[in-house]
Length: 386
Ligand SMILES: Cc1cc2nc3c(=O)[nH]c(=O)nc-3n(C[C@H](O)[C@H](O)[C@H](O)COP(=O)(O)OP(=O)(O)OC[C@H]3O[C@@H](n4cnc5c(N)ncnc54)[C@H](O)[C@@H]3O)c2cc1C
Image (cartoon, rainbow, N blue to C red; front, top):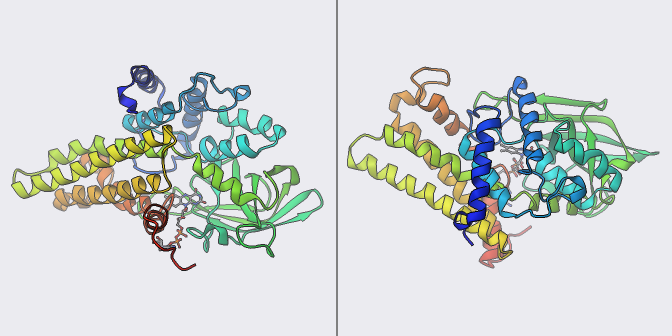
């Protein structure tokens, strides 16, 4: 199935475009999963609530929490793509995708009633407290511990790379609750109130000059026992299931690159060698977009296999890196101007994109780890020694 060949869906797309033109919270100047300046957060909350009210987000939720009976799963891809194409902010944090998915599948009725409406209204922004200094690709090796003390869990440990942790109201936390169990088996998922005593959020300044993610220190943090998502020691299943719901990223990725291809045309000199380099990268960007559309179709038809999303992510992030490098190269000494310089091409988008490009090859699964997925699950090569 081709999404852009369906008349009904193209009408839906036109509706999204008109909605974004009216309600978007302003231009997003930087590529990637970024954190806004604090002043912009209220506008992004208001925009998020409007996306839910309009049925562009949360349409696949249970009807009791605002889902729509006539929901078409292709719509989520269209919304993500149009937001990227408009060059504006998507909802920030981990609530609309990960948190909501975990609550809908594993949450108690009380948790759903308390948290889902607050995700819809964007009163609650969530962050994802999974990664640790010693546990990223090997997430199951996480060491943050939670021990039961009466009717509370007490949490000690450290998280890192927590995107938007400095703006978040709620943390989706993974912690080890049974240190004696096999590493995947002793983990529990929690809903953490980020204003709880004992939490220290320290923003990290990145090579881009921005602070998008944080270190989060947890020192004797008390979580009421009824904030466990799913069963105690079953957090690995909860986390993996909610990560699998995070599909719309497949749609958003290439739309922004296509927007910036025009800059390259403007920068390219007339010599044949440069034109060939621009042509080659433009082709890769369009192939990346075609791959992502093909995988969206597989997902909608439930014919996707384990390697599909991994291949799209690898190809996109490597293409993005090559595009950013070429864009900087073509600017010559102009490449060293910084954002805010009036001579900067596309207001400095290229300089930031160049510095950020490596992050895309790590976030959401590092390239090498995804290549293992492709090798083992699609090519059926021998498993790497573990
Ligand atoms: C922009 C960005 C935003 C993020 N946001 C969040 C967030 O909000 N919340 C959160 O919890 N985490 C977040 N992360 C963390 C992210 O999930 C991890 O960075 C990622 O899982 C990789 O883990 P690591 O950084 O510990 O690197 P490592 O796992 O230590 O990897 C280091 C290097 O070793 C390679 N490697 C590791 N294992 C293997 C293997 N088995 N075979 C071959 N090579 C291997 C990797 O490919 C990489 O090159 C974010 C990361 C980025 C870059």
